Length: 558
Image 1 (cartoon, rainbow, N blue to C red):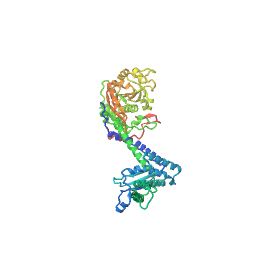
Image 2 (cartoon, rainbow, N blue to C red):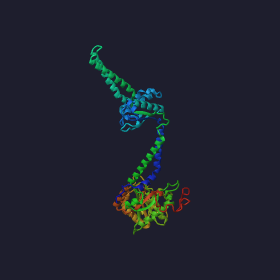
Image 3 (cartoon, rainbow, N blue to C red):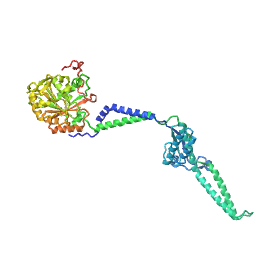
Image 4 (spheres, rainbow, N blue to C red):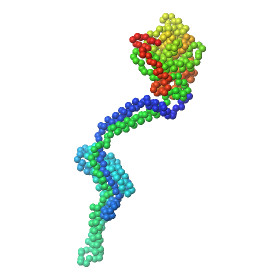
């Protein structure tokens, strides 16, 4: 059955988030700390603000309205464009020499920034915020940024004054144009008067008309020159810029918190999405989707202390409880064999899933109950059973396997030799009713495991045992497990919890089915008990106060 798990699994996501919580928090803290120190080293930046009021052209006093000449209302957005023009920022640039706090280098750099704002229409040194309505009414904040707070205040005031001068100049445009027209008319009238000849006591009607026109134009021009002093703009400075006391940047604490929170959320979301989309086998629900039986869950094993074998650690407390539960489950699902002991092959998907330690612990549990058990280490490339049993294996007595009676010096004490010559095969006696056959130490050419020899050899051995366990390498790594699978009574798959993907387990299952194997089920190894709601009595038995094996006594107590 192909796994159907492409939808988001929030339960799995939150589980993955809990496991990675410490790493996520650590990375977020490091990002926030780095941000804090990076921004703390930056030069402080101050902002000074000038408040400017934009009002309409009419006031509440009619006499004032008739006397003053007001600039037309500013349309929305016009004041922002004016700030970045030559008429404002150019004036500020030309008056930078008035700011004594600036060094020559700073003055040149600031002038370059203002020139760039004029050419591009966008600047960061001088900005304005606010908006006016259709009638030209509104409030604006003109801001100036600089590393020196006094310079920032003076820049804001210079820009405000330049902006007001530009606004006033808008009102003078029509008055100045009218005065220029009157001057042109007066020039023309003077020319025509000169053409009428010398002044006589009785001037001609034409000359009299021209003199009257000159008098009217002079009166109008004088009135316009008087109006130039009454022209006002629509902008007014409400509050000049003051010297700022606190910088606006950098803000290392705020930036550190923001960056840390962003990294925390980003990593958390990434972990949750990855865990949901990359389905991994970690519970019986996952196995049900693959139509596989969960045989048992074995908790994660702590590394044994120096001088203690891994197998002894498996006998303590919660580990022995879970292995006993697993051993009983295997006994219930194995079919009865008329010729003797059932043969169980133990394999895995990856190296490191714990299939060898699981084989040894099941064998130890069954032997402790009085059953006769034979363990065959069929991993020719990485044999590990001798290392698991340690002193019990190295100091073990060699015993003849069923049907064997070798002459001295002709014993077959390795797996390949025992399969080729069953009549000379010997095994290590780990305890009275527990025997072990292991290959030679791994080499570059480990040899070839013959399925025919395996079938004939175990057929003669199974009558003297109650259970035969075959420790095989990962089934998709080498061909040996698939070659032996048809000749065993059941295959037990060991998977490290939350390591194998659903697709990988499906490929393993397909390969075993094609090999005509009887898959008993799956053992989830290295389970974290804190993440399981059902713990099957983990830690129910009392832990022995005296270790079962001591390096100084060099003996194994069963």
